[in-house]
Length: 393
Image (spheres, rainbow, N blue to C red):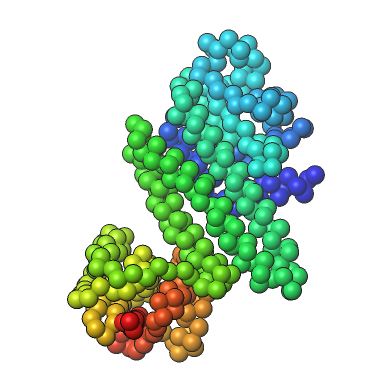
């Protein structure tokens, strides 16, 4: 039992989003204390804490479970919401508020997807606060579900890693797991993004607005990672990426949009775009845009920080060609040889984000279009070039 509780505390500590959740809870509601608690029949343990009122319970700290309202929540399965203890018919004479000195309180049960009770997401303050609004209760429910999702994902990841010790199943199980996890992430990610949008529409302080905006940006980045993971799984499990190729006169507009989006994300960099599509390219427009985005993001990430990046595209009777060029240190020859393999990068830097799938997926898109993706790298420049011949009628 003790090992299980220690693992539960470690699980919460490994979820980066929890500290942000507790920060949002405090700043949006005004409460001075918020926590994620592991609650069992005989123990209440703080897994993560944000304490702005010196309540005095650190992560790993415990309260006597029978003295907490979380004990009652574990039994009833229902949240407890109190705006003002002194005016509350149920809790004005309850011993718990008197013991811990709070006047406002909100605690939401956290249930794992299989129905097991984990604990609570709770918040309290010595002042009366309006916590019973549908928006606030809904926010707590969303965050409790998000924490439960992360706990379940960690459990499934550990179970999959254990299964992967069997050498005969390693490759197949890993890729199937990635595909399933990628799909399972979409619904909670949509909920996170929607929750952030709701928060941004509420009357928040400057700090809370920044936190909610950071959640929304992180959700957008995570969506891109999920897309890459799913494309990787499709490419490995389904025999390659699927494309729908048609003569597309709108490709140039789509490429302009890709450049604009990357420019907005890298406002300090200069991106030169030279697009000359005199003939509609026979392609899957969305996939070619994805290829361009991956190559351009790679150039901005690995190129010399203060140097410009060039995007050139042409389409004529000879076919379609797209190139992305950056300045900076050349890619070592041994790295070039494996550059288009999954989880490979042109360079590795401290704090670098991403999965190393962008160039692999770009090469798969090129292959699906019966084209080629090549790289040349010298001290002068590094250039990725995608070429797709005009199909023979």
